[in-house]
Length: 228
Image (cartoon, rainbow, N blue to C red; front, side, top):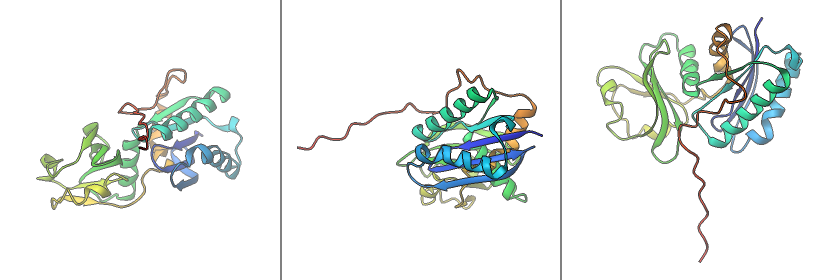
């Protein structure tokens, strides 16, 4: 049996799960600002104890690789890499937007449109991509500033369901009749289970020494304005 520890820290959700052969068995998650540094290792220990597993029992560590929060991704990936080094376990990296789309499709088996996961990147910019119901990529991942013409090629003839924490701020702009919005958390480590298992079976592992998160955009440090 493939026992995989799964970590998602790309957004404000701090989420940890354990799957066995592609099925989520245990999960611990919380939504809030600046949780990852203080909560992630505690959540990992908690799900391991709940599952009755030792770290040596794990077959792999899976991480949501981004795009998303620079700080969250850095914490999640460094934790996953540290576990892989210490335990001698392989590292599996799952694209965050694909994980989100997989969660929606699993929960909506009758759905036949396109899925557009969005991660908030401040102002009217989002990290986004478009998938069909078989998780084939229709539009590659990009940082996109949303306006009334965004996705018009797709929306003219088919339904797109927008999901994720970036989608809510776009609902007033994307007003086409084929634009649907689902307000639900899909940034959950539970949504990695089948994807991680598929990569485990195909031995699609990362080089732990050189793997880096998929930030998509460079981190820009801003200085606070000086008081006059």
